[in-house]
Amino acid sequence: MPQSSGDQPASSDFQQFLTNEARFAPTAETLATVDVKDYQELYDKVANNFEGFWDEVASQFTWVKPWDTVLKGEAPNAKWFVGGQLNITTNCLDRHVEQGRANKPALIWIGEDGENRTYTFSELLDLTSQTANGLKSLGVTKGDRVCIYMPLTPEGIATMLACARLGAIHSVVYAGLGSSALRTRLIDAEAKVLVTTDIGYRRGKPTPLRSIADEAVKGADSVEKVVVHRRLTPAVELNPDKEVDFYELINAQSTTCPAQVMEAEDPLFILYTSGTTGTPKGCVYVHGGYMVGTTYYVKLAFDMKEDDVYWCMSDIGWIVGHSAMVYGPWGSGTTMLIREGSPDFPNPGVVWEIVEKYKVSKIFTAPTSLRMFMKFGPQYPAAHDLSSIQLIICAGEPLNPEALIWAREHIGDHGRVPICDNWWQTETAGPTIGTLPSMEVRAGRAGKPLPGYKARVVDSQGDPVGPLKGGLLILDGAWPQMFRNIWGDPNRYLAYWETIPPFYTAGDVATVDEDGYIAVLGRADDVMNVAGHRIGTADVESALVSHAAVAEAGVIGKPDEIKGEAIKAFVTLKVGFSPSPELKKSLIEHVRKELGPIATPSELDFVQSLPKTRSGKIIRRVIKAREMGIEPGDLSTIEE
Image (cartoon, rainbow, N blue to C red; front, side, top):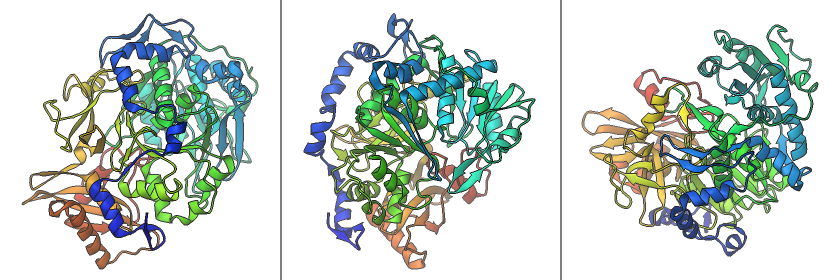
């Protein structure tokens, strides 16, 4: 594509991409290597024999006892693989050791300071078994809740797997949340044991996790023991009455721990939602359907291969860290690379240094990260050999066309590497709507419902809307890895199906084009009503980010006596650009040109950063609350 200024698409060319909706067909090289070459053929196969398809997929795993019924009942009360018995860790670890992958790297871990460790499947099984035996020695048994408040380290992942091996229910809390957020989750889950770390690292700064945990357990009376992974030298002193050193506990244990036999519908873990819509909810997931569904959808959406080195740039504190980092990839025996810390520290090129060194083939990241890479400029990826990359997958929020096109050019080897968008939620637990590598990529559109899902865009009565008309995104039917309940609050769980019964209502506004490609515009409460026109905040944000000077944008609607709502934008600039009245005017005119007068911001402020969840989603309600001078509600998951 023609370039201007060395790193930005020429203005006229980019305008044409936006106007005509940029579309990129898969290359012949991609089509020759992917497992699924025809989306529609697979979609129809699943739809025509839904239960038979999942019966076939589930048969590829190791079960203690086969299931009697693939699917019993309907959503929201559907049950999967009823009568089947298993343990998910047997399928993530033991199965690969027994099938010739014992010495294959399972986990490559990199610390922010450059420390690195590699565990084979055999070594990871040993660490998991020792950790499980250590927890067992503290009295942890099937059904007990164990809270994990740890950074992205092998010890945190081994603790997740150890809980699953014992049949205990783990609740991972992102190691960056404050003591009150942690305490709330400890109390809600009635956790018996808390496993934590003395410190975590981000951008070179240590976070004192143990002292936060210390404060959190005050008032959490169910917590009997706190296990502390001590990283500092000299080691911090522990309270012998309640605290136990992680390695002192597990080093004394056997490397053999039989996996607890679990019913398919027995709980596996609780994960609290990120809090963008208020008070966190403890979503509950189970061993059987979660194992089958997440493994299948991660393998499908990411085209997982036996020889992949796959880097998931998330954290165990989120659903991506559970489904696309731990359980899903290891269900397929994939080599996983993870890194503690920020992707722009200690320098903006560290991601590409790691890709080159470890020959990373697949990357899962967020649009936020792509925009950050774009902000720093193309010189950083250009300085490294990125020829090992075969696929980049995005999820978490809408992938704006500007970031997609920039990434294709500067990270994706001028279009050789597919940049594929995905949409899913904590509640769906795995890729739900997406663009497979063999599909045409349409900028601004997440893709189509993945085989096995029935996703639709409807009005408030549940009737389908026309092409490119805004509506509510719903899912019709059940899927294997779906959440099964809200811990301690079943009515809150059932509410997901009560907005437009009998459908699962995602709470997102979307459009669908004439070919079935869905664009998820944002939360339903992120739609502004300007003079009778419904305008998505994501639309205005995407238009702003398409300007050469803009790194990120957050948009809200403010009450207006005449229009109902007026649009206000908050913008962070790329390196090399400075706020000025002229630039503000230019940005407002840019949006007018892109979206028309009705979507033009009435106000625009330049800011240094935007409030986000730890998973990178902009929290517009916080922006709006601050602008309106009101309390923003739960801020337990805010990043900055």
